[in-house]
Amino acid sequence: MKTKILPFVLIFCGFLLFPESSDYLPLQENMIEKQLVERGITNERILNAFLKVKRHMFVKKGLREKAYNDSPLDIGEGQVINRPYIVAMMTYVIAPDYNKKVLEVGTGSGYHAAILAELVEQVFTIEIEEKLAEKARKKLLALGYNNINFKIGDGSLGWAEHGPFDGIICTYSPDHIPPRLLEQLAIGGRMIVEVSHSSKVQEFILIEKDNKGTLKKTNLIPVQFKPIIRGKNEK
Image (cartoon, rainbow, N blue to C red; front, side, top):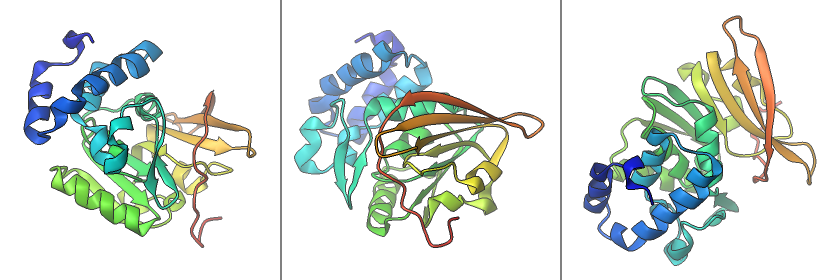
């Protein structure tokens, strides 16, 4: 792998934070090169985040050898950790920056929240499955992430009291774009959501809000996620 893209200091920090990291480092580097760089994800900050955040720490121990494969993995409660490329692509298109505030709908394992926390000022993440939410919260706090805010609840309603958000990432697939999330997208903000038109047709949609509040929608690549779990108040 081209180490010039990935500063040595992050590799060194990885050894300090995760003693067994050296066992997985070749797999991690191969993942970054083959699954991200060769597919067009070349942003240095994003690649550095994927090196620093150890994906094997967010999967079941019995699946850690598969943690850097190009595939989703079971995390319990009927949910999965998404493929590394999907995480990277969704992160890239919202244009993360140091001073931005991002909402993530679907905490899941906490892996994507950790990636975002390396890139933006504040992350607000919502998970409706209480067991997953609490497990992710404990892990991320233990790893020292103090810029992630957690909520258990219906993510399709967003988190209005902390909005508007510069970026919104919806990691589960509704059958329409939740209107509450559109309301909470900041002027100049970007939102990415995977919408299920049917059981066989799903696609990523990028929504951008210009300085007049007008929404621009762009259809991106097709993909398949778990359907979103709605709360009673979602319309």
